[in-house]
Structures are given as structure tokens and as C-alpha cells.
Image (cartoon, rainbow, N blue to C red; front, side):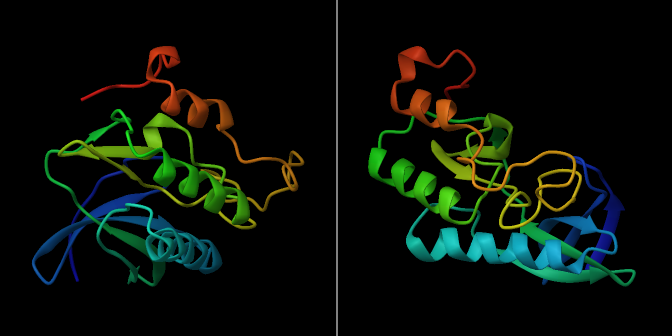
Length: 168
């Protein structure tokens, strides 16, 4: 692993890295190895059930801290393209409900590459709240609620009603 430079792209500290000469973005989970493992597991589950996701994610350590490294996608932009495959969108929503992924449905947690919408950032899955890394239930009770963004999922199915979506 070659650490290139610190580059924070969200709420967690991050780094641009290369793994076997391939560019990745690594998100650091200071003193939270369980959160890094939970995000990696969420990505594996989405991938295994057939939801289109970034092609590779790895658990790594940088300076003794756990990180999730996501393969970089050149030319991708944040947002959601028109989603024609309603089955895949429904599948993504069902999986997000089962693993309590609070990050789904938020347009800034998707990349569009070559017309394909790819969910990114699975840090809100399982027992963790997105961004701040607290356990769900700390500060607010989210356990047992539907995942955040159900309206955004519905809007993705009806492009004419979604004023927040970017179409590429």
C-alpha cells in the first residue's frame, strides 16, 4: 500500500492511496475497527446480492488505524443517474432495510460512472450511525425505523418528481 496524500472527501479523515498501482480512496476509522469491518461487510452484501457497487473495496491499515479503501473511479461524479432498472433499485432498498444502512437514498452517497449509478459509503450500516461513527441509539433512536431516504428511493423511480437528482 502506497499512501499518497491526505484528502478528506467526507466526514472521516481519508487518504489517496495506491494498492498494486491501482488508485483507491481510503477512509480512516480512528479507533473504530468494528465500523471499518461493518462498512466492508455491507459492501460485500450489496455486491453478493447483485447490487451494482464500486468494483473493489479492501480493509487496510494506515499508521495502525483501520481504513476502508474503495477503488477510485475516474470521471465519476456524485449524484444519481436515471435508474431504469427498478428491480435493482428495489433490491438495493430491501438490502439497505435489512442491514439498517442509513446512507442509502442520499444523492451524495452515489457515484455515476458511464451512466451507471453506484452506491458508495456504507458507513451507516448495521449498528453504526453514518458520519460520526456513534452507535445507533446514541443521541437519537434510529433502531427499528425504515432506512433514511425512502422518499429519495421513490423519487428515483419517478424521475419527473425528483428535483434533487442529477441526471447525467
